[in-house]
Image 1 (cartoon, rainbow, N blue to C red):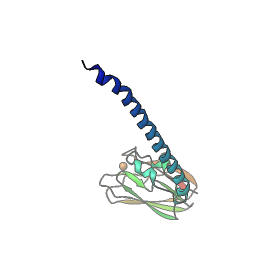
Image 2: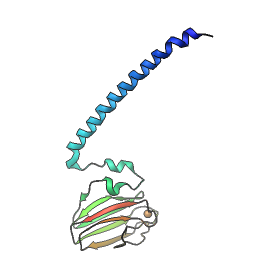
Image 3: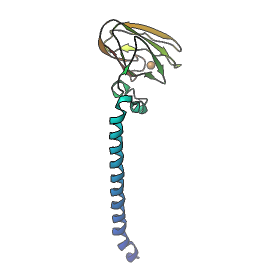
Image 4: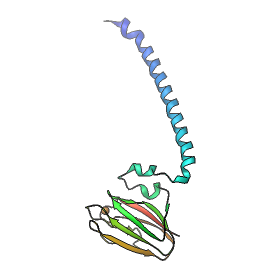
Length: 151
Ligand SMILES: [Cu+2]
């Protein structure tokens, strides 16, 4: 019945909508710019943005490698390895400690090495005498992935 009310208000609403989208695009654009300039300056710190993804075991390639010492420890906690991307010198050792109640392992994808299944609170220490990039995972929860670089 009331054509006069709904008629003219529609284009106005459309115009408003477009205006809002434009504003949103500008806002997002400036945020993206801020983020990219942040990245450039934050490079030195090696941020932990990748860790925010969580749960998916995506830290293997997402995180920048943390430069470790000749005797490093990796905690297995909340179904993730921490740090998830670690670099150690040739001849270094890594101790994995399971801080979850669920059992976990750290197993090289090429089966070059394996901690075996670690129960709650258990640790295993492995020595890495040769250089290499090792992607490893948990045999019980294959979505848990991480990387160890020996060089
Ligand atoms: Cu596991």
